[in-house]
Image 1 (spheres, rainbow, N blue to C red):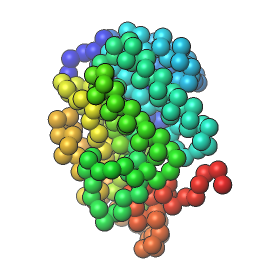
Image 2: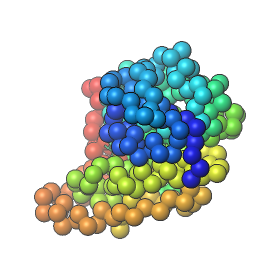
Image 3: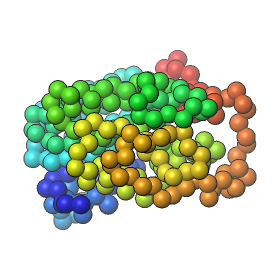
Length: 267
Ligand code: 15L
């Protein structure tokens, strides 16, 4: 892929941000890293900017002279409404406004399978389905996808919303035999999102080439994503170390698993 001038990576000290920091730097002249917390020492082509995305003025500066954004920041699980509000709504809005006003070309960001978590496991879905979020966190991802579509339709700012499954070094429970996204596949998918000539607003499921599949990526074929890993190689190990789910347990009845099964966070 052609080298970009400057990429901004948010959430740079989180799990996925730390992974991308190592892998994405070679695709740009300058990698600007941001988070609220310490991100260590800047490497040769890195810039480090401490920033709270809820601070609109700071985000306006943060997004200046940036070609593309990889947004892995924000609250990454169910939480209080206040925490989600500041990060996934206010912070997300500030980011898109900064990108629009500073002429950023594309935002690639971590949406989540929890935007569609209440679909039953008996149904394989593609990106055209109506969202069915399974948590306040999932609702915030639906908002993000709405923003991404709106900023493409109204302002021509491109986005890829990656509905990430379970991105971990290896699957750790039975549900993840279906939802697992390996680190190498996640890096490859992010590179596809950076390199694709035109994405408009694309929704893609971030999932490896698992034998057991709930998500169909035919609507994101233009990204050229070809996952290589398959959770099936862990089946024996997972089945030996975990109990089978009860048929009626929401953890296994719907795509979102435990997020759907949990009660309201603040009750
Ligand atoms: C997510 O959205 C979370 O960020 C991650 O920690 C996992 O829980 C994942 O979903 C999942 O569904 O396994």
